[in-house]
Amino acid sequence: MAFRHTLSGTAYVFDDIATLLARATPFRSGDALAGLAAGSAAERVAAQMALADLPLTTILDNPVIPYETDEVTRLIQDSHDQAAFAPIASLTVGALREFLLMADSAALTALRPGLTPEIVAAVSKIMRLQDLIAVAAKCRVVTRFRNTIGLPGRLSVRLQPNHPTDDPLGVAASTLDGLLLGAGDAVIGVNPATDNVDATCTLLTMLDAVRERYAIPTQTCVLAHVTTTLRAIERGAPVDLVFQSIAGTQAANDSFGVSLALLREARDAALSLRRGTIGDNAMYFETGQGSALSANAHHGVDQQTVEARAYAVARAFAPLLVNTVVGFIGPEYLYDGKQIARAGLEDHFCGKLLGLPMGVDVCYTNHAEADQDDMDSLLTLLGAAGVTYIMGVPGADDIMLSYQSTSFHDALYLRDLMRLRPAPEFEAWLNRMGIDSAAGQFPPTLSPALIGLG
Image (cartoon, rainbow, N blue to C red):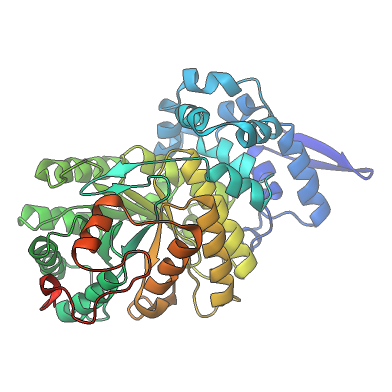
């Protein structure tokens, strides 16, 4: 099925929906690398105009990756709720944009089961940044484990105390730093330097001991591969959240060593531990534009649409947290600050619209054409868009992963600017500890409860 649009006397033809979506995407280096980007600004505009006129039912009836060959496509198609889709079934992509801008939060919540990743990716491609922000700000997604994430007027922070040798004392020191600056309500989550079960169990045990000793109403996680975490569970390690990086195609997930069946097994294992006190959202997923392309597993689909398909995978497992590590993969996929900012707002919009507790790692690698000013801009825009949580890294410089992210102080800036507060249970704990959760201030003498941490 080909799609056509004539612009200024030139006829542009797009062979199928995947091509149309790719050509309509605002320019980014990853799509150019894959040979999928529009050849000119005029072709991009023509594709966006053709996309705006495309009926949503056409997208539903024509998966970008065949049903028979991809389990992610099967998940998307088989879980689609026709009743929830009914209010927008007669609309085009352009009309859906207008619907979303006018809808209230309740209408957007009701619509979630009727939306597919390809539909939300399509509409994002014809939206300005202010559209992406305005709609996402109306989307509320609330999840719970030991505290409540995603309530209005709240901003959570993942405390990311990574260490280049997984030294428990080094991790504990960074954890104390973050706690004293009001970070950690999303999760205290460590990326292990080596993915092995012994190191994972050591860090899990240390983090859980800290959490229990000081009665911190949060959750901990070591971001090891899901199979490593399963082995840790078998050993009796104190696993709160099961982490996994995921992607939007079966082939890309194969490259990560995961499948939908394995993720179901992991979630069942986490739930069997019954460690959540106020909820059972026990999964934590990370994604990123370009991962499928880097694995040669994108099937000719643009990176932003593939990214949105990863959110269908996440949605199937009721996660506590999902975040797009937006600038981490590198300039081959998002070249500069402008591309990173657009991608971050797209990902947040698509994830929230599909019903995910969406965070963003506002980050870049040192060889990208970006700097901390670019990250400040994106951070502030995401605050306006109602981002669920961001990263808290000591000094914004991850010494293990060697990339630049957001610091504990950046989170304090955003909370103060937007009048946002931590998760309510965590905020109450901070107050009991004598820490000002809004300003990150603490008494000259630390609370006795925190003395000796680490």
